[in-house]
Image (cartoon, rainbow, N blue to C red; front, side, top):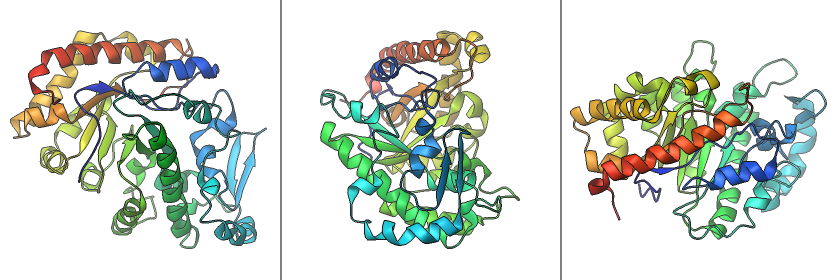
Length: 346
C-alpha cells in the first residue's frame, strides 16, 4: 500500500454541514488544511448524501417535496439497459450541478498549494441498507441489484477522484459508510463472509488513494484489514474500544495506512463540555494505549490527521457550534504539531 495521504496532524472534516449559505460552507471547508466540497442537506434535498449517490441510478424514485428516496424494481428493469449503454460515459457517474451547489464551485478553485484535497461519496453498504424497494426491503439484499450497485458506486468514486486530481494531484476520496456498524448484526441479512468478499472486490475497482469514513462502531478488525489507504473515525466516542484493536491498527499503519482521528465533538452539549486541554488529554490517552502495545510513535504521528468527531445537522445554534469545532480542530492540531514536531516527516 502506498497511501499518499497527508499526515503530520493536518486537519480535515466530514463533508455534511448544516449550512444553508453555500459560500460560507465553502469558506469553512477551506479553513482546514485539507479542504473538501461540503454537502448541504438543509440547503436542498438534492444535497442529501444518499440522494447525491443516487443520481442516474436506475430504479430510483425521488420525491423532493416529501424528501423521500425509494427504489422500484420495475423501474430498475425499465432503465437498466439505457444506463448500461452509457457505462463508459464519465458524465453518467459525475455529480451534476443540480445535485451539488458546491462541488462544481470547488472544482473552479486553485487548490494546487494545498497538501491535498478530498472528495466523498456515500458507500454501497450504507446506500444499500438505506434505500428500500417497494416491499420495504433494503436493496443491499437483492442479488440482482447489489452487484450492479457495487460497480456503479466504484465508477462514481473514480470519476470524482479524477476530476479532483486535476485540481490537486494529491486528492483522495472518502467512502462514507455509517452502515458498516450494522453489517454484522443478526438483522443484517447479509453474511460477513459475503460482505468481506464483495467489499474487497469493490475496493479493488476504486482508484487510490481511497479510504472509509464512519462515525459508528463497526467490526474494527474487519475494517482495518480492508485494502484501504485511510480510515476516518469518531475517536471521541469510540476511543476505548478502538484502542483495544492494537494489532490490527499496527498492521494497518505498517501497510502505509493513515488515520483521521475525529476528536472534536460537534454536538452543542458535548462541545460545551470540552476545551482544547481536555480534548488533547482524550486523544493522547488513546495514543498512549496504542504505543504501549508496540505501535511506533513516529510512524503513527506521521500518518495521522485530525478532524471533528462527527457531522451534526441538529444543533439549536445551527452552524455556530460546527464552525467553532472547525476552529478548535485547527488550534488543537497546531498545538500537537508543535509538541510532536520532532516526529513529523518532511
